[in-house]
Length: 435
Ligand SMILES: *Cc1c(COP(=O)(O)O)cnc(C)c1O
Image (cartoon, helix red, strand yellow):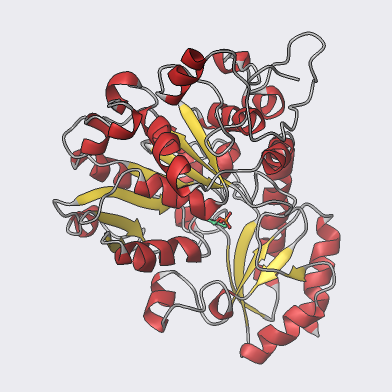
């Protein structure tokens, strides 16, 4: 077993390709150590002298002290995610919600203001629009395709971050990175991007001006619907010393007065998030889930192309079907295609598409009930195909206006297309639509 932490020498081997890093990145065992990242199911680490522990506790030296703030298995997963995304450091969390909360709370204070896209995962919308407001953190929302001028009108002196999703869930609009990054840069605030539905395989937001990337690892990183978890990754490309972020540049009395930007110029964001908020809020990832996510990453580069191919084929089939009113897949519409070409590493979408059935809510009900290969689930990004009716489920808390802004219509069915044989999927959708 590794003595304290898996060695991460592959972190210093950037010449390895993305696909190789999916499999080998972040963990480099020495002779006779396990080839596979071990599950270190331990809360506790042993030390020989009190000076060593003191150096770790005061952030003078890195070392595991207690698995709420770090653990060797979790560190292996974090290192791999960081390599794939091209960041400077990563911190894993108990869920995607915990990741977005951690990323935001590490930046804002009560009285600050967040600018967020309307097309967001339902939980991210309620976090920003409702729960954070109770803690004195204000928010405004912009249509992702609103003009630069319209979005800039919403920027206030207290605005401290811009938040969006690479692929908005479930409106599926692809983020206009250049527009939002330039607004963020002009106002000296970080651009935070939730990359859950694209993953670094399709898109690496740091290359397009994002400063912080967040994940629900629950989705394509896991890929098999086994575990809940999340990750926050630092691009190391934001100047926290510009005067707007005193928590980064003034002494933290809880760590003997450390100043994060002085001591950790490249990784201040993640060190502060881990040291303050994993310590105090405790939303850490378990070693077993880190192991499963790490295993999921080993097939990310194989699964994502298949999800994309299947989704495109199903979208094409649905577009021709007489019972289908409309289909939305980023690979099919003009804006989506344009942005895939501009921002994506591979020129396809993910496995998520939406469509509308002709008829009323009863037609939706009947269709869902008849599916045999696909199943009604709330989850997305599983190897198994799932469908969902967002207006009555994940986004049921929204009023009609908010639904419209989020890009959700009453007839919308969201499909998370899996990696099954596409012929079986098409046959299943066909029989259910015709029933
Ligand atoms: C699922 C999801 C989340 C929330 O993640 P959990 O792991 O379910 O907490 C956040 N953002 C996006 C885009 C998601 O799809």
